[in-house]
Structure formats: structure tokens, C-alpha cells
Length: 287
Length: 329
Image (cartoon, rainbow over all chains, first blue to last red):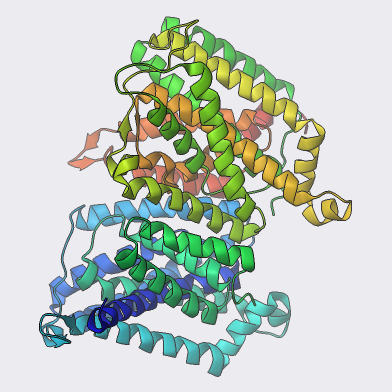
């Protein structure tokens, strides 16, 4: 593998890792703070992608679609939290697994009824439809850089929100000790609603941003969900930093695995997870 | 994790009665129902074995595995690999090999997953099952995404499994055998220990039980029994594909156990029958006003699952007990 090729794969793996991080961050926060196993998180990604496809077709602009999709999905998250998830924070994990599994089926059919079962492409915006030449015949598409940029921006925003703002302080306090936080007069229910909606929003935006590259197709959520589980397990539940590092690690192993060891590539990530579990059963950054 | 639920370990009279009636109905069914329906019921019985094997983990030991289908599918694949394309293969050695193979896989994966707890356990079992899924999905040698056909049912010498009625009764015998075995296990020292682990693992450990070994044993036995079900499935349908190991299959099994009522095996059995029946019902829904209700079966199944979780977390057996007028068992 020469340098240009290596660079392309490296950029690809970082981009994939950052995309996974957008999903895993919401998942790990929902696990860590509310203690909810959310199998439907992949469906939010899928719904986001289809929403992006529909909004792009209607408004003709990906930027508008991202903004509109984010707003709609956050509203959807708030509604879902209010109607369903709120009542499941204290239930068994088993009940949560079943509830969210049922939701996967419902969301999958919602998608099927609203947008059909076809695969759709989403056009790359004209302003980003160029590539950066690396050698004579190798180049890197600008849109993928834009994707990584959006993910990085959101990751930085999330970091600032959690570690520097008053809201972030409350979120961390709620994760650390729920009862104590509540008795200090902080409305923990509202914090939960915000975190949940934020998670849904991040997953949906990830779906929209990824749509021009991956196109949108039925069941696109389930594969990404399982990857996110692996990321959360490796990183440690509730740890944003762990999710970031684990997502980049999974991105690297997956991308380079597909190039260097194509026969076993799809298993490598799980082998990585098994090794981490042997070494640290609670993940790398258990809080 | 799950302690609050009533587990109905001692089955009250009303439920025993339902079970006996069910057994009589199953014995009589091939004479009453059509061949097609008899096949459908053997499928249900196979899934009932699968659901009971999961109940050993989920209801008895308190380990929620979201990857149990891996062992089910693996045994089906083992049968497919052992059956030559041109002739049947003997039941008497392939069945043990498939069951032991599934058990071995469960032991190896269990070695990793059993050290995790709660949410981690759920995610890790799912991830490992997915690993097995992709191993078969991506490798043409192992059948790839299309799966493998099994042209002949296993040869049992003493009886002819190609005969649908014989196969039906063979499956029924397996079902009864597994049920009796698991009920016996529930009241053995091992079963009591596993129950103790569900209720309070810390206390069991403080009493000197090596809970890791017990949980690994439960995981292995459950995997092997799932293998028995998978073997029968492969033999019955004559076809295996990666979907058998998929995430949906695992989640369906969890739902079967919940639907019936967990921790006593009878519930898992009842749940499997109810779930499969509903699945058929939803898939056969008519088209109303241009809307194909049957095609969108996932919508009904999803809503049904959500409603059960909200309103009937103790399952069908809980309802039978309530309406059967028994006092709390």
C-alpha cells in the first residue's frame, strides 16, 4: 500500500469512526444517564436518512435538510420520550429491550408506508461535488471531508456542552447520582428528556449527512446499531470520551481490515471487542 | 436485575390442566388437522424447544441474551454440512454432533460474555451472535447469504423422518423430553443455584458459590438445547440461511418467553405457540382499501410487542393463573 492509498484509507476510517461516534454518543448517554437499552437507536439513523432524502428532494438543499431534519428529529425525540421512554427508566432491561425491539418494527413500517421500500440516492450538493487530487489517478471526494467536518463540529459542540455549561454539569450530576441531583432541586426529568432528544437528533443528523454517500435503504439502521453497540462496549457505558476513542478504533480496524484481510474483515471488530472485554470487562473508560 | 416478577416455579393446578390438555391436543392433532397445519405445529414445537432453552438463561438465571439464535442456527448449519448432497445421513451421530457443537460454541462465547453484567451482557451476546452471523453471511464456503439446502432428512433407521407424521411425533417427543429435563433441572441443586444467582448474585458469591462457573454452565446447556431446536428446524425445512442466527430471531425468542411467562419453561412453551400463531395471523391479514395489512405485519407485531410490555409483563400464564382462580403459587 503506497502513501496516497494509505492516506485515503486513513481518511475513510476517520470519517467512518466519526459517523459511528455521532450515533454511539447518543446511545452511550441514554444508557449511562437513563439506564435504558435502546435498540431503536439504529432506526433513528434510518429515519434521519429517509427524512434527509425527502427534505432534500423537497427543498433542494442539503444544508436546509440537515437543519430541518435535526429540528424535526429532536421534536420527535421529545415526543417519544414523553409518551414511552419516560415510563421505562425504572423497568427491567428486559422490558426495555422488548419495547425498543417493537419500536424497530414500527419505525421500519412507518418508513415503508411513508417512503416505500426502494433504495434512493441523495445527490451530493453542487458546492461539494469536487475531489482533492492526491496522485494522478487517486483523489479524495470533498463531500467526505465535509462529513467528517460536520461530525467533528458536533463532537466538539457536545464536548463543550457536557463539560463547560451549566446544563452539562446537571447532566453529569444526574449520571453520577440521580437521587442526590433531584433532591438538590434539579428537574431530572427535563434533563432526561433533553438528553434523549439530543441523542435522537444526533443519530438522525448522522443519517442525513451519510445519505449522499451510503444512499438510503430499508434496514440501514440495524447494521449500524450493532456497530454502535460494539463501540459503546469497548468505550465503556456512559463515557463520551470512551465512545470517541472506541469509534475511531472501530473505524480504523474495520476500514483497514477490509483492505488488508478481506476474508475475515467483518469479524475483526468483534475480535477487537472480545480482546477488550478480556482485558477490561467494563470497557476502556468505565466511569 | 429481574427480581420483582413472580416466577410461578410451582405450577398451579389451572396451569397444569392447561398443559395436559395441550399435550392431548398435540397428540391428536395429526389426525384432525391437515398436513400443512401439522407441519406448522411441528415448527411451533421446534420454536418452543428454542424458547425453553432461552428461558433457562432469561427466566431462571436472569441473563438476558440477545444472541441466542446463534446456537440455534449453528446446529442447523452443522446438519447441512454433515448431510451429503446425494443421500441422507444418520440421525444417531449427527444429532449429538450438532447439539454438542452448538454447546461448544456457547461455551467458548460464554467464556467471554458471562463475565459481563446487565446492559453489557445484552450488548455483548448480541455482538457475538452478529459475529457468527457475518462469518456465515460473508463466506461463500459456508453458504454465504443464500444459505444451504439440506436435501434429505436425517435417517433414523428405526423410523422414517421423511414421513411428516413421524417427524411430527419425533419433534413432540423431543419437546416433552426437553421440558421434563428442564423442569427436573429447575429443582436440582444446579437449578436452585441458578435461581439464586438471578435473585442476588452478590449473596451467592458471598456464600462461596463460584457464580462464573454456574452461569457458564447455564449458558452452555442453553446453547446446546437451542442447538437441538436448530437441528430439528434444519431437518424440517430442508434449508438453512444466516437469518436463522439473526438478531430478529433472537429477539423473537425473548418475546416468546415473555409472552408466556418466564422462569418455569411451561410459559416459554405456551409463549412460542402464541407468538408463532400471531405471526401467521398478522402475515395473512387481508388488504383493506388498498392498504396491504399483511405486508406490513411488522407494524402489528411491533405494536403488539409494545402493548404486551406495557400491560401484561407477566405473560399468558399469569393471566391463566388469575382467571383460573388459583391463589398465589
